Image (cartoon, rainbow, N blue to C red; front, side, top):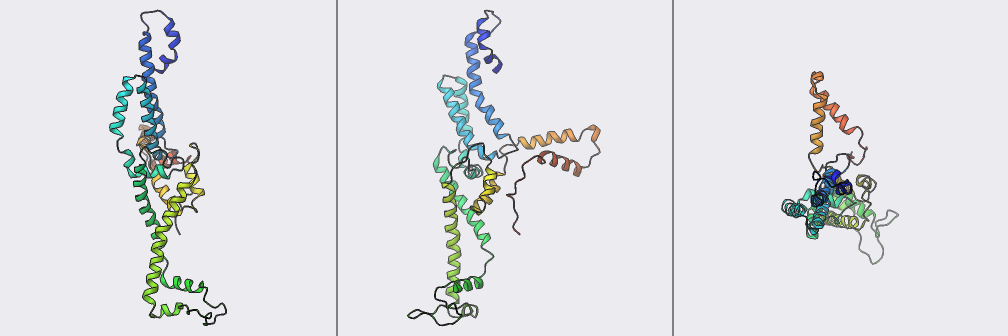
Length: 299
């Protein structure tokens, strides 16, 4: 169809009954225009060398616009495609893994969504995940070090080591009183627990608000490199970005692996062990990928 459209002018000049009429050529051109966005989207989401899952929601939104534009030109095929897209892609923004990956991709954030209410629903669940990350990090501290640190940083504590306080000031409770089970033990435990809880809740709100205020980077930039550079600034979101953006949008990469396995394990190489085949396939599909260090393990 594209070759016919390309040669539209020469074919229209030739007056031969064997050639398509001008009306048929116009119909072919409308068909090519209606199907071209689907070809581009298929290439985008079938990739395995870069992040693809975060592009699903923005590409679906762009498909709706492209098909609607072709439909306005009177294309019956575009009208049918628009109807099918509306039926098959309905509710795609409510799928959490797709919505979270799109929002965590600094190239898109909330710009790819058609319904902003879906963004708010996704953010609520994302905040819950962020709180789990913070709670895991804050599970290590104990009461005694926190109490000692609080007392040592108190403005009422004498720097010379004396237990006397400033005039007209109440003496600050010492860490030894807490450790010995004094009268303030339960109160101090309640204060420390409340500080940890409020810290986790407030930190996630501050972090996601700060990320929302970040500028969107160009579309041809690498989102994983951006997260690698900003990991100290967004400790919780960076972990969730790795979790959600590492998913492939389609099963095409897996199908390519199966096809490659058929090439490796042929009749002439049928004595290869399964472990060896797995190693060859792994090296073949991952050796040329960029080496990101975002997947750091906590020591």
